[in-house]
Image 1 (tube, protein in one colour):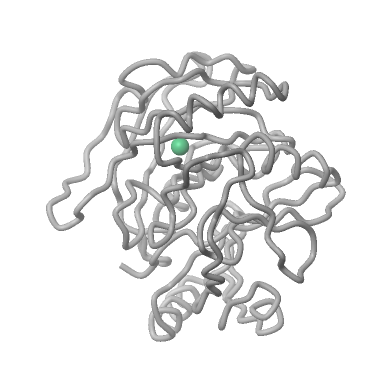
Image 2 (cartoon, helix red, strand yellow; image 1 turned 60 degrees about the horizontal axis):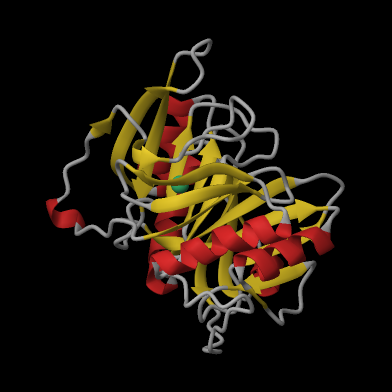
Amino acid sequence: MSVAALAYIIFESPNADGWAAFLQNTVGLAPAAVAGEGLFFRLDDAAWRINVRPGATERFAVAGLELASNAQLDACVERLRAAGAPADENPALAAARGVLRLVQSADPCGNAIELIVGRTLGYEHFASPAGVSGFVAGDMGLGHVVLPAPEIEAARHFWLETIGLGLTDTMTFTLVPEIGPQTLYFMHADNARHHSVALFEAPSPTGLIHFMLEARTIDDVGRFIDRCERDGVHIASQFGRHSNDRMMSVYVMTPGGSMLEFGCDGLQIDWRSWIPTTSLVPDLWGHKFMGPPGVPAI
Ligand SMILES: [Fe+2]
């Protein structure tokens, strides 16, 4: 396993105030004092986990993946070059992100990624401004992202063989009858979280299908639902439990037009005894879809 965890995510937006209100007041993340472009947010003892930087349009910019060592990063760069993929080491950007090394790349569908070594830890106590008891993060990373992957088999090969994630499982189901069955690949890093990155066989105008944050308790999820109703945040998919990662969650629309999955009780796995499967349904119960058609709640 090459990747340790999903370290950070970066959005671009012309609406920093909207994102700040959403992430702090509704989601319950803490503002982070980081000398960089845009706004930074914390959810554990990492110096920052989410950055919203200025941009002309709402879009998901980058997923940052942490590797365990310089040797792992060097080996990954070799695999990227052999595959003809971008692999540009950028010391100035590493300094801006507060990491020791950073390599910029992108998957075959154009999803931008940064491979990093040597994340900064502030060890500052995380206290949620909205009263969330805490997030399941730390060594398991910030949560997960589901990336748009219209060329899903090329993307699958890139993420599994070139980047070095492990295949957790697969899901195939029909969300939109006119489109027919679509595939998701769920992939894990070298930690117990069911998936840190998943690929969905569809494009997305925002560059992201959704990102997921995992709170510690079901009460945190219930109170998040109350805050969404208080703050007028659209709940795109009602409370439910997924079949494969057992996450109990809701999906809400972010100010950027992509979705946040806010959940708890996700499966944690010992990979030595794991056997990948294919799920034919996304949910054990719930997750009634309330949003516009074609936007999956996965
Ligand atoms: Fe998810």
